[in-house]
Image 1 (cartoon, helix red, strand yellow):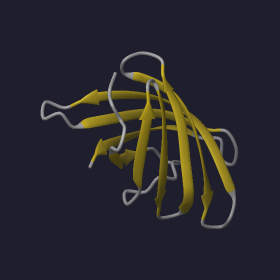
Image 2 (cartoon, one colour):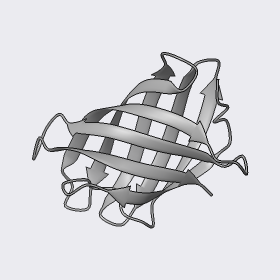
Image 3 (tube, helix red, strand yellow):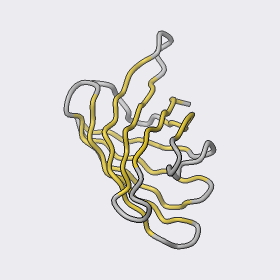
Image 4 (cartoon, helix red, strand yellow):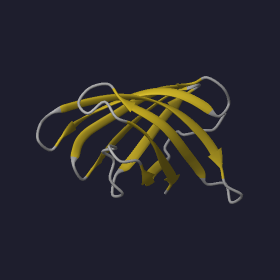
Length: 112
């Protein structure tokens, strides 16, 4: 299983309807197959996610944040974790909003 504890990630690509901006930073903590992260960036504040690895590289997660306008947003995702040849962790997330615009999409993140 990939170790996310203490790792930081930043988004590199995001589908239309996604709220995460390129300046966002996700800071992870992990215990066993369970993990959490706090994040913030342009357009939103107080973001959190919680997830569990189903396999060595696939995890299910839910996330929520407060938008700049004060609205609350929540969603769910399936994340696929992998490592580059240099050992950098990457994340591909297939996500869906559970409120608001209800869009679906895909985001890509890299360890920073």
